[in-house]
Each structure stands twice: as C-alpha cells, then as structure tokens.
Length: 306
Image (cartoon, rainbow, N blue to C red; front, side, top):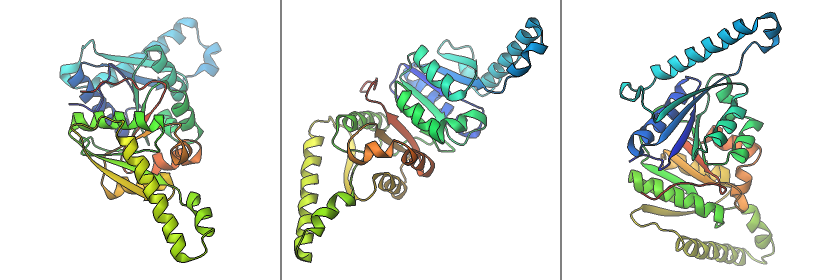
C-alpha cells in the first residue's frame, strides 16, 4: 500500500535529488492506487524582457523547445513501465513556481501536493521564507514537504494534536496512512510551559506548585483520552505522548528521538499547532524536521480509509 489514498496527486519537480524523492513517493502511490499523477515543472527564467527583439515565430519556437526539453527530462526519470501511461501527466508552465503549483492544483482539483526541499531554482523557494506561508494557506489540499533523500517507506509517523477539529482531521489522515503502511503511530500533545507559569507562580509553596502541575497534566490526559474516543484507530499500533514545551520544538525533537519518517500536522488548530504553521515557526519546522511532513488542510482532506 502507498502513503496516499488519493485520486489526483500533483508533484512539483525541478529535477533535483529532493524533488526526485518526492516523485518516487508519488509514483509509488500512483502504481498502487491507480492515481492520476500530475508532474509539474515550472520554467521561471524565460526571456520575456527581450521578447520584442524576437519574431512571434521565433518566440513560439523557443517556448516550444523549452517545453519539449522539460517533458523529455520528466520522461527520463520515469520508470519505463509508466512511459505512455494515461495516469502520468507532465505539465510544463512558465512563471513563478509557487504560483504555478497553486494554480495547477486548483485547475486539476488535486487531492495533495508534493514538493521537495532544497531543490534548485524555484522549488526551493516554495518551501523557504514567506512563500511557505502562502503555499500552506492558499493550497486547497494537503501539502507534503519532502525532506528525505531516499524513500524507504514510513515505519514511524508522528501526529501532533491540540484537541481541535483540525487536529482530528490530521489524526484521521495519519491513522489511515499508518494503517495502509502498517506504520507505528505516535500521537503527540504538547502543552506550553507559558500556560502553566501563571498558575505555578500563584502557588504558596513548592509542594502546591507541583500539585498544580500534576493537576494540569491530569486534565490534559483526560482531554487526550476523550479526544481519541472520537477517532477510529482500529488496526493501528499507536503510542500516546504528552510533552511540555514549545510545540514546534517538541514535534521536531520527538520525530528525531523516534527516528520518524513522517510528521502529519493539521493547520489552524488551537494553541501551539496554529502558531507552528504561521510565520517563522513554519520555516523552522520545515528546516529542522528530520523527516517528511504532510500539512493537512481542513478545507479539503480528501482521502479514503484503506
């Protein structure tokens, strides 16, 4: 079974090593689930500034040649048995890579976007800086950020929750993925120390402070158990983990400690999850996570249970 149980997948490629891994993951999904796979390459540097120096025929020929070269490059990295498949669709666009990714995703109504980090040219900028915020917020579907250098499957998956509907969607997605891959799933809740400090400072003694901390932990554990009752975790081997700290740091550290291959996280949740995905925290997670990440959008989380 593959990671994704989707009908339409878009993978952006710049022919770098990282984007090749993203393509390998998506090809695996396409083979297993008869998925429609759109492979997008965006040509960013096209001499529009000098178009007035060229005849319309010359300009058209130049554009056509670049498109043909890009399509041939895509074909060169595809497995031989997939050449000519109607389920594999190369798409060549001219423009800003992140804009073209979002536009093509909408046009094809894809269920997930896969992009690699540290690629050449435009794909790298899809992930880093302010562009990441726009991709996560504007993409209508889940986005997979591929950091790994080789696809080895997903033996361990981390999914952080904050008890919101968005993290419920992420957990359902992670559970479906774990079930399909027979992965071990770690369900992580992080409560921020800053939320506890006012209560601890109000304590008259150290003993009272420790009692308050234990009480807060018990409350979180109760919420944890109630939240999991709403989720179908049948057939999934999972662990519950409760940690205190900065959510983005704890998520990355947990993934590193457990040697996870994938983090699944929902957007627009309460508490730390919301902040993790907005602004500089998002860049920090993407840059520091030791594995691939799937950001699940509440607007469209189209997947089926295997």
